[in-house]
Image (cartoon, rainbow, N blue to C red; front, top):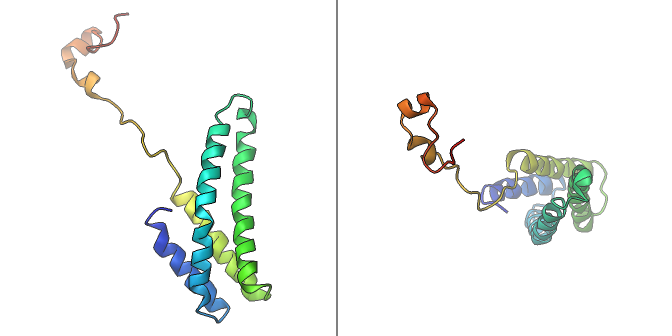
Amino acid sequence: MALAEIPLLLGTCLLAARLFREEQLAVAFAVLLVATDPVFEVVGIAVQVATGVDAIVPYAGAVDWAFIAWGFAVLLRTQYVLTGWRGLPSVLAFGLFAGLLAIFLAVFPRTELWIPARDDRDESRTSAIDRGRGVPPAGDPPR
């Protein structure tokens, strides 16, 4: 879980607890939702590796959607374990949690931790005059 997600999660848990008129649920929601994060990280890495296999590439989109659906199911199950079914507050709280998950997926997408920086230095080694004459940058094989 990224640090920027923590205040958003805590605020959403507090709002959901207020919907149930039980503020002590805020901490319980937060703890149970964060407790599922390590499992999602491990499975997310497995999904990422698996979708790189040539045999699974045509199904990569379906696998991603199944992973997201699993996340929504875990949200619903976590809420049901803590509060049971209470009608409208349950629906509204699930809407809050589902909206939060959607925001996390859209605004805070997961990326590789170690992405190599683009190397523009080779381009800068060739002068503008050489580029105009078609001389390749230093280190590139001649054409």
